[in-house]
Amino acid sequence: MFAGTAEELRARQAQARELAVQAAALLDQIDALGVGEGAGQLHTAGGVIRNRPGRGWTVASR
Image 1: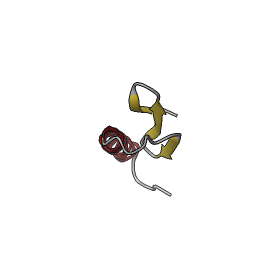
Image 2: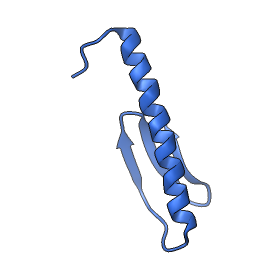
Image 3: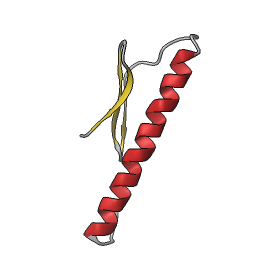
């Protein structure tokens, strides 16, 4: 469990969100290879990474 300040928590949450956005971009690249498309969603500290058919992977807040 995180035990830092509120400011440190916000900074870590922002970093987690940025990493989730990067993960979504990687999933789009994998799907673009054309060997099969991923399905579903991943729950992360940075948000929920969801596959939107026809729109690729996106990150949504919880």
